[in-house]
Length: 256
Image 1 (cartoon, rainbow, N blue to C red):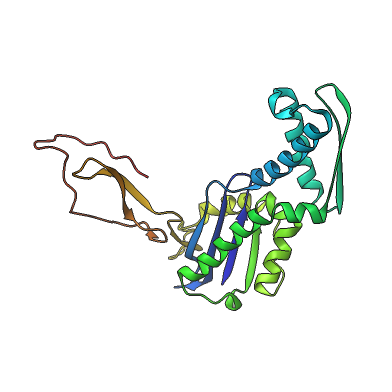
Image 2 (cartoon, helix red, strand yellow; image 1 turned 90 degrees about the vertical axis):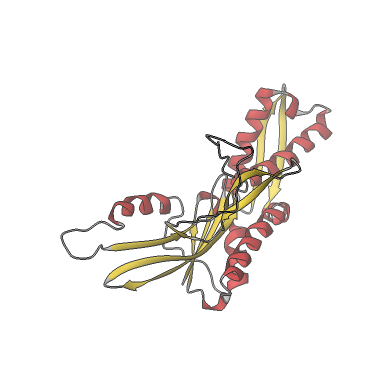
């Protein structure tokens, strides 16, 4: 069993995948998946940015968040700081902002790890949740695969090693993993002249899918139609919906 920890720039996903042979084909079966579509490396950038912007405001009495040019320049430097701290023990910003040419801001690895702890904890909560979804013991996970550039943050590897009791796999480049998967995708379910496909993917929905409904009292609510972790493709039919008025000829469904 393999756990895929996908921490990208703007999203986070974690999947528990069983890899084995089924009817002579190599099969990838996703047991469970969950994540946060609004959690990613940008959140780490924002944490560094807020710290640096506060330091600049305290030192010069001016807020770089109020100046578009200064904001853009500082954000670029904060992203560079995040990348540098993946391998270095400290990073010092040196840049000119709002006509102040001597702004410096030093970050140590210890400070950085402390600042991003809430973000790391959110990702770990997703890891724990996906294991709980299928009642799977973490000791039975054979490998943890890191996907996405944000997994280069040293805190990610140390956190997962502490949780699983073994380091994550380092043989797959996290920046190339998605491209490698896309290159293999055409082989999924295709046949090369043999009676069986070389690769089989059994996937699930990472998020629940529902439709926006209205109660008799006039309040809007979301009715979950396809629960998270449902095998796909799937067919789900519910018969307890009613049209908003008699002789209705068409409806527009808002999928949520």
